[in-house]
Length: 303
Image 1 (cartoon, rainbow, N blue to C red):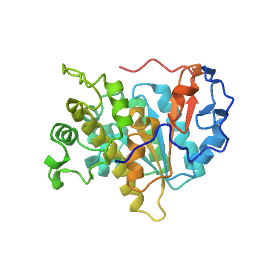
Image 2 (image 1 turned 45 degrees about the vertical axis):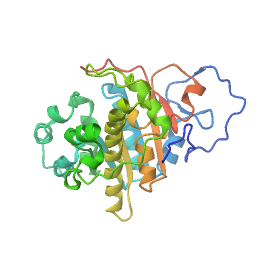
Image 3 (image 1 turned 60 degrees about the horizontal axis):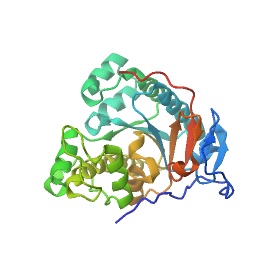
Image 4 (image 1 turned 90 degrees about the vertical axis):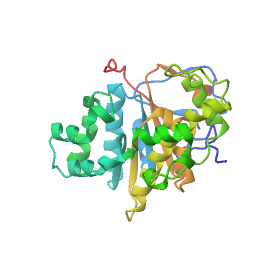
């Protein structure tokens, strides 16, 4: 079993752990990173410089918060300056729209035509205005965009019946995932309320066979994102730095996508997350990410 440890060692941390750090919540100043592995606060630039030395940088998000997408844009722009050989992968796009992304970057669509060609309302239920600055940056700078996702039908099939029941031809080029660690199962159990969604009764625990459906579905997404990143890097020489625009639930504590990337041989991966709270709890943040950036108060979520 491949386990994503919590806390996980950071490939980016230069500072030594602060063994005298207070375990109570600490003020988290705006425009600073908190680096859990060192228990330190750092300005914007040093963390991004270290991130640019990795193979993959995963920028977590809550999908409906505009300020988070602005932060992602700023991070992607900084990474592009530091590593011009950059590609950006997006969770919201299924693989079969990759040709549309390529044509968008090539300047062959206007915005309305692009959103129609990817069938935005069907693939992603959030306001496209939240993401358009990222898409426009990629087009303006001719940064390749990678469709990371798979079709929901594959996720449903894997969740219900497992990978063994899905023919190879229907797997969209995605390989079965490394098994979920016990810690990841517990994380998912807590995050989903035991899978009590859509009128379903909650499972008794993370190891309850009734909860396996949720784990299989989540890991289908995790593996899809990781395979798309690995496949893109493998096609190019030299391989680019890939920045991933992905929901934070697929990234936290090194579970999800980072664990699957490691299983695919990509270990130089870092996770960067946003935060809006004025304080940060070092104990709760241990192993959460390589660094957590304090944002300004966000706009109201877009419905």
